[in-house]
Image (tube, rainbow, N blue to C red; front, side, top):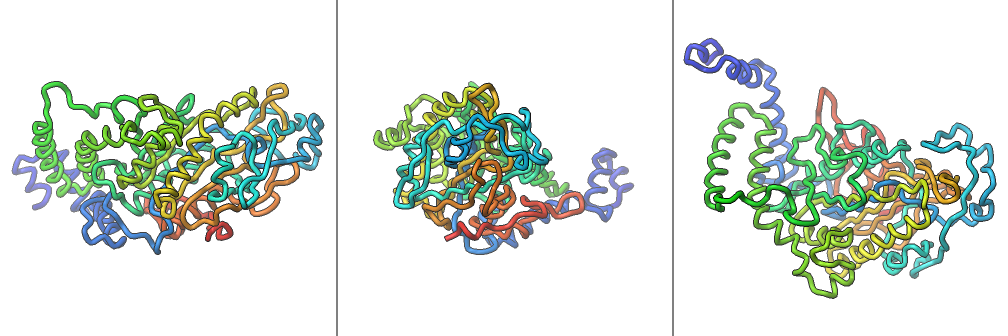
Length: 478
């Protein structure tokens, strides 16, 4: 039936023209997008795929199948926590060498600011002899299960671009996040929970906002779903008064039927996303309150993390992350925006590490005891580090993209090693630099993907998480 025939039969002209353009005029944009989405499922080897979140096979056998990213937003100081620099202590209060700062751009301070020695003592821990600050006594107990990457670098020196860079591989808003790419590639094993769950536990939300867990140009079914740490895990999860579960089920079935008819006509993948989101929300009404109830955990587990049931905390979200992974969630990310110490460095770092160190170590220990660490990847780090030069009188450091530290634990990694090295002042990477693109390429590799082949076609070109960059850091792989 052509367009004129439809008009004669009483169809809405705008509706007809849109249907005709999308499905019949030879372009077929919506239909092509939806067919590509389904074809991606089939190519990934999922014969029982029933939707975009169905479990898919990666490019090769993965070392891990799920991720917890502990995002310490704000820029933790590697010089106070991981990267011991006796020379920096020795030259405290002096000007840095002129050649060190040639061509250097700082965010807020004059590059001629004086050097600031480390505020805390370091010691060696575990059989590996890994150096850690006195701020991290709990991490010291599990350090032989941890891979420390001291040669990190990035392109951004302000918070929002740096966080977006770490999360999406680009400083430009609108690209898919690492969690979204992971769910796009692997789907999810959770039938009654989102595949990608996000928490925010710091003094404020991350500077990069929701783009840190967005799906960008990928279908929105892959974006992160933010959970709260108190009350309903997701707002409006509870039914309004007078609506019971059967009424809601009947309503959703009717909406699903209408959406399915529209999907068949339009081929728009966002309609498939809407169907999936309604169904997931319905299932979450039963599953989410249960998974968020930490009182079900034994007291010794609560004590290990430092959790008080009923009280929202970073520790509680780390325990929730483990509980979510047990129920098939693919990717959990915890943003703790508290690490921007332009001043009051000493006191704030003590407080931040007091809030996070025990729970981070407990998460690694708990996963290992349950046999989950061997196929789980835990990533800890912020968007950049801090300068060796002082800011804020005598107790602060500026943003620093040239060198910082992250750590990881889990399957496929060499545990108990430190990779990379900075110069004597902790200013630049001196050996084994790992760019953010390299980190993301390595994470995808552990998940079973060639980062150059996990692509999505958008606006006439193939996009990927690492853009045209990135290499797998084979030196840290087991």
